[in-house]
Length: 148
Image 1 (cartoon, rainbow, N blue to C red):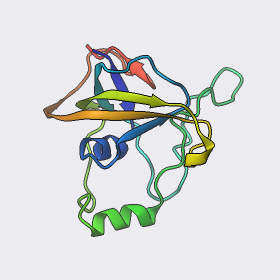
Image 2 (cartoon, rainbow, N blue to C red):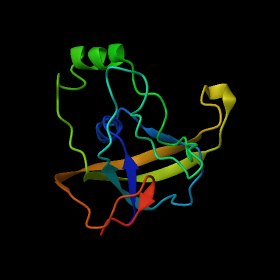
Image 3 (tube, rainbow, N blue to C red):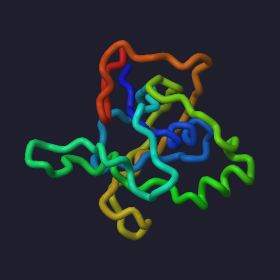
Image 4 (cartoon, rainbow, N blue to C red):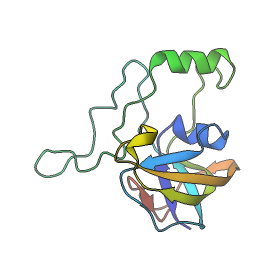
């Protein structure tokens, strides 16, 4: 079974059923098959709406993929989620481990009308949290990888 790398807090939001779609710049043929959700080690930063400056770059110095470089939730959104008890204040979410599994039910093509210009919407279904997070034995990759 393959694993998909997803940054925290997005992996946790998927596990809680709050985030029901994953937005990516490419389509996938892994539709209808169960996959692991890997909470990547690289996390979002609350203090800014930008991702870490350690983004993966190609030999030319340009970013090779925008899949993992979208803006993070603004601080007000995190604060609101804490106030409505959607997430615990100051919670430390697991990273660098497999936290659950899901199935991609449908892939919707990019559509500027839905406000997500240029990104495919991978509809997630049958999301399951695993009882004990598991560290992969193989090296994680930015998107799909074999964890064991």
